[in-house]
Image 1 (cartoon, rainbow, N blue to C red):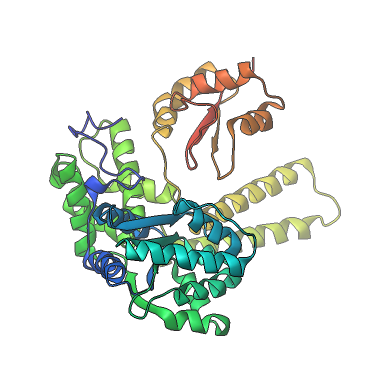
Image 2: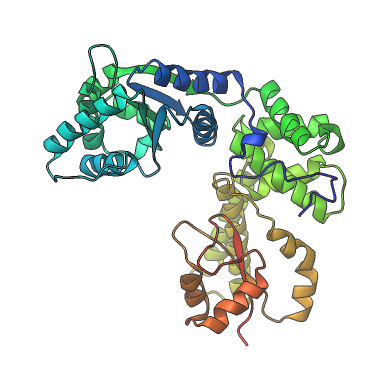
Length: 410
């Protein structure tokens, strides 16, 4: 929505992986090369490990673009939390072969013959397991049996693990030591350095046909990359929200105050030592005031003193809220929040009851959210909510991380 204002051809910091905006840091290049090499040389088990948001899924999709579909058959497992039998069924389905038995050993035996036939036809079968840290240790242990499906020289199936550091902890366990020993190629995707992070932002802006200097001054960009800790996903969230807010303020460039506002909203601003000292001092003063009020009349609190206590409690709550926001998770402020910014004044004047906004969590449905808010649900209420949230095109499809606006019930 801000592309026209900043003279961009497209949004450069969308959360969905877009191959056109692919930026390969040295560790990203290494991870991509490791997958390509491991699959081509039929090494068997390949592992790519990295923190949340560093770009593991982007690398997997980049690999998929490089494969020769005539000679490489890829089976992509998105949900790693499955049993070994269910995983075998997924492999059969990916190979287009019906399962003729329910016995795991028989399934493995039949799979061996299927893979042998693919091998003779010059087809390399690749199983990609995303979010591998969610796979149970029992399933991982059984996966080791797939490495036994081989010829005298080559593995018949290549298995690519993509997971967070917790996956390495699983592999280091005593129960999985045999699987750990069978991983032939491993690569780690690291967070971006300061220089790489700045290049990352410049690269994406260039793809959107705009120069970084026209949007992010260098000192703002450096501070932004520093606060992101080099995580590409966090950089995208910060940049996108900074552009949305600057658009709301009608500012052509992102300044430090906007970045500070966004960082504070996302819980990324840590208090300085001086701020921490004043917070501690305030808590001490509050404690002393409470003690003095109690000493004056420990049995009964008159009306004026009740107000004092309530003020103290309110102040304490505000301090606690400030402290807790430091550790709150990073969630993106979506484009729908611009409506809140632009219409905040008119909403306060025109409506006695302010519009309620709710962050959509994983597993939420529009019908359930409407019922939770209004106490009932019907097609009229759902349509009313859709009208106040133009981004909802389909009542059965809402986006995790978006904010939904509930109008007052007539």
